[in-house]
Length: 221
Image (cartoon, rainbow, N blue to C red; front, side, top):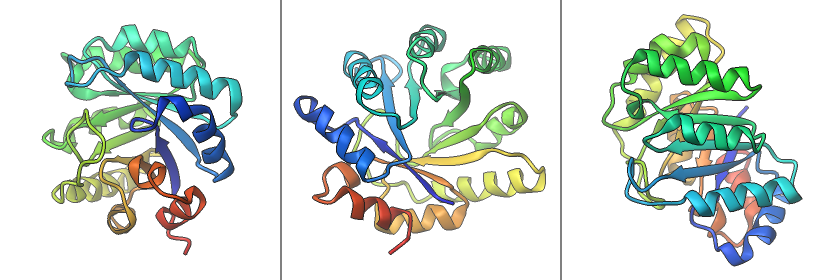
């Protein structure tokens, strides 16, 4: 079953409560919170994403998944664990070595939160293989981290296929989530490659009909 995680990165702050409500009615499976520190990536969304997370907790029961694009992973893991989000994913490139990756995985899981690793387009997918027994999902970035509205990089489809094959061959229970450039056309491509969770932002939030947009991405119509 394909699930949809709606990114709020490009939404209007003044309308966020209504947008959250409308997306819940439209049956988004998750809210996707893109936390950027202005260092790991150029954009800084720290204040905005904290506010959005608090708003969601106030008005919605839809699970919140946090994607950390930050240099200091541990600092922001602690911040969002306190907000009782559903899952926290961090960029593998933000960690100096294997020990640090395993430390973050362990800390997140110890706090009753699901954990994921995200991987940028230029990083070899094999880098995540050794961590698959310990995590709940991998976010394959199909655009460069840091900005919304980019087009999917075609070469990343092969990474999804390779990851899906490795997970299947080793009988791991790990979700493959794809983030970047998702629309009606690319949704079909990444689903066929093995993805089961799609992160979509502007395709949904810029549409006039959230219900229809989400159904299209799930390939139900």
